[in-house]
Length: 230
Image (cartoon, rainbow, N blue to C red):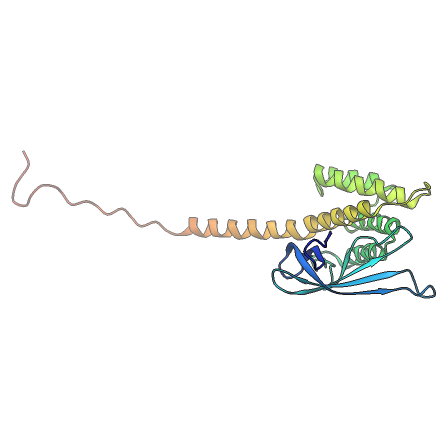
């Protein structure tokens, strides 16, 4: 979003340093277009009004005006944890590259390949992806919510993989990437962290139970010395 009401151009952006949406002041703009190289591009340099950190954004024109601002520096890419198997990270990175190149239909197809990889990495290789996902659920490898996520991604993959006369939208491709990241994080990062947490807590509980308790101290008789009770 851009605001020119203050006299200096303002943009509402996500600051990489503040890690939150904030106003930013435009510091410079460069427009470039060479028909032999590519499409028109608009590069905008801004500085965060909160922390003064610089950010660089790119917009491109595919014939319908400038598209949304996309941060190119610092990189907006989120890298997956090394706990996610490398083949799956590679598939997801390919999907991200397609998205960054604005090939949204191709990004959706690559997300589908990531789903197929998740099944294969868990030794589930049914005739179709939907059958593999159902077996994953039946084997308690994913719960009902993750199954629903994965099935929606599968449907979007099919729309992208087969000719329908329409393209996958940027919004659908972005959601597909976010959901696939969440799926990978849940299966390979959060689940492992929970197991570590549970084992650590279980070890502390066993250690506490093994500590011997001190015998109770006998209380002295309330009878005063030299005086016998009747």
